[in-house]
Image (tube, rainbow, N blue to C red; front, side):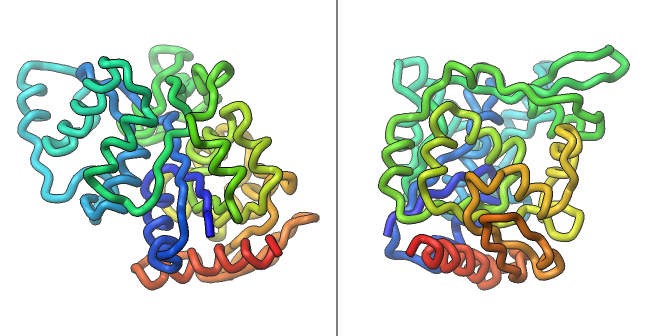
Length: 312
């Protein structure tokens, strides 16, 4: 069985760990969001790709859900001592090594997809991890503060400002001319089912869907999504701030409608959201809190079983 999954960071990575545990013999291709990517201190940082790689490779900081386990921050402290900015993005010493390797390979002319494959050779995540595109696509956020109306990189809005300044809109710079990375469309075409984990529907899954050709390819497949919203709150993170910025309610119903019935065939929601409905979509209610490994595997199993049932 060949499964394709689109994924952002923490929520997507943890769901994928459950998916791999519940269906260990399946071939899984993960298309990762690169809209969050940023250049810091001359190094190219790919937060979502790295979170998936570290999580599935057993190198993640489990408590915070991102960055390396057993991390130190000597380099960050030294950069701060020199007054180097930004100081709000906390790269650890072990994590720096990944970004150095990636940046050196980029400078040597290797595309991001090949670099990601090379990095994964160390971590052995048990999935094929592909960036959504080899081309540079960055999510920027239009905000208004004491400096007036301006655009900032998504990471500044998310990490430094903690999404406390309302976003007027999002702009994915470079997506109009981007192409899916090699292997992305082929993986979708060969997939038996596609699963969307409970990643941010605006700046993770939504970003991947903006790359020309990806959404069109997915509409020909059986796609099951797992709601990132329980009741009226995100499972994790600040998806509510992103949904508000694009005028969408924070609910499982609204996110399903955002994705649309042309894309989604099955929708897994929390038990408290069992009234969600959309013509052409099979909605199933299950416990959706990923509070431990068994619960996460059960959620992944339910999503996969629904997808296989619909694909018959």
